[in-house]
Amino acid sequence: LGSNTTIRALKLRFHQCLILDNVIGISLQYMLSKNKTLECLEIQGQSPPQSPSLRVKYLTAGLRVNSTLQELDVDFAPFENDNLKEFFDATSHLKSFAYLCPRCIVHSDGVLKLLHFEELVPLVTNMLNRNKSINFLKISFFLKHGVT
Image 1 (cartoon, rainbow, N blue to C red):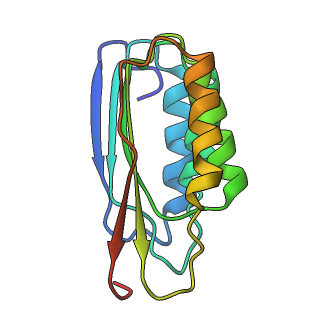
Image 2 (image 1 turned 135 degrees about the horizontal axis):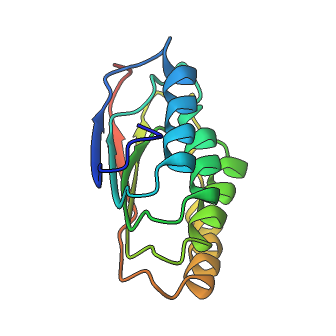
């Protein structure tokens, strides 16, 4: 996909990808950094709760160098605060960005830490102050009971 010159939109769906999470993340980073026509990316599903999501790290690295993405609709498992800060920092530099919809799916087993609301607001505010091209922003948190 990195060298594909015609793809404009891509929708990925993952179902509990534990073993392939690193491979998927590297592929996402490569695609975002090399593809010059991709405008819309949707990623549904997240890593299992037993594994920290590496896709966030790789997705963020790819976003830092991408110049064509306009829409990002993505599901995340809860992740470390530093990864969230990096993600919002990367999105704040995308001048072509118009639509951002991150969703965080939180498991109620108590093992995973959710970023507090008061920590999220400054990150989003800074992103919006830097990037005036975002027309639509929706951040959602969903509580999922039990570990699946």
